[in-house]
Length: 356
Image (cartoon, rainbow, N blue to C red; front, side, top):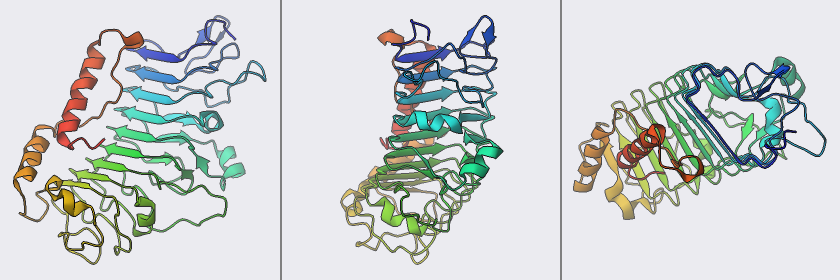
């Protein structure tokens, strides 16, 4: 292992237009990713890759050879932030998953060729098709501006299928992902005895600019949403219903709901119209009813605070992004990228009323 890398905690690579790989040594150059027998990142916690327009892979599809049994690369990685890498088709090869048990935040921004987040080879699928992928510590997922994204895990047509489990996920944001037709499957997955429970810790969900989505939640998921506090759905042209079937569970903690520019929205769930007359289903929402925004959604019911939200929504329709960490390397003064992310974060906060 290179001695200068053993304590490296943050790796930021930005605007390297001709770069095709992250790490390479003379005599053993890896063309597309981080695979190299002589390199390990045992302490790396934060990985940010921005504007690498020629990189086709972050990690090679082939497993990374470890330099020694006592050293494990990427096992402390907590944050992955990928921004505008135009040649990427996938983010993670499946062999990396056991190393990412400390991953807490995953953000993918404006990668126009990304089709899947986790890629499995055919032979791997045959061997482990029944083994769920578990992100045991992942708390925040954001997907923005991914026009070709089809699924989280290849082999499915959903963002989240029963092949993946997110027992710690709290914040989910999906904006401008036009190809997805479902986030979760309409049919409840089989429940293996040892499968980790997913989505029970979700507190905020923001979905925007997903024009093929007809609904957000299948009804079987309601027991998993008992910690949901904030829900924002905007600019989904085909959205007809929020919950795909009858409302069998209440939203015990839901305080803020924003429904904006949903021209085909007809109802919240199968047995109700758009109104919120069912107090048992939304026991907390009534207290914060002024935070509810309904714009162009088949109703003209608005209050003064809602009108404020409407105006903010119109101002922020062009680009809705939510950047979380905008400091430069080593706390230095923000560069153009950082300033851009900061401005986009302010737009998002205005647009969805501090959803995240």
